[in-house]
Length: 89
Image 1 (spheres, rainbow, N blue to C red):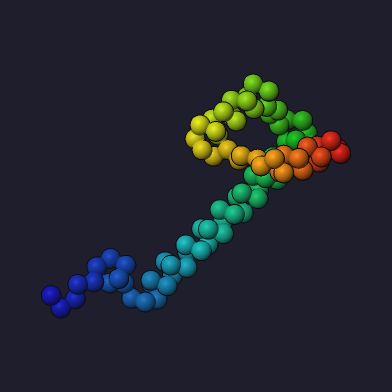
Image 2 (cartoon, rainbow, N blue to C red):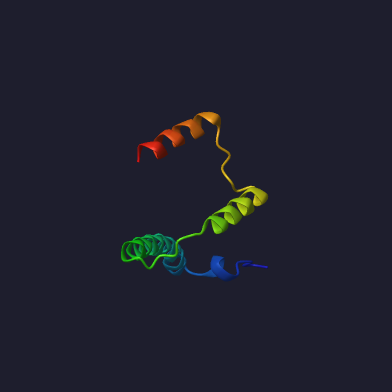
């Protein structure tokens, strides 16, 4: 077995570089799409076309987050700061 290289490893370095550089571009586009989605959400809010969650939907979302382990558990200090912020608005 003189040359065990196959696939990507067997390609010439220029072709490898070209393919590898596209990974960064894809990652960059993903961030762009995220920003566009955020802007679209802001526009929907302004125009009144955004879906407003009902209290029931919020509650179910919170329950699901707790069950999956993704919910943020506030410390008493965090809760105190959040309460002060909410009251000041």
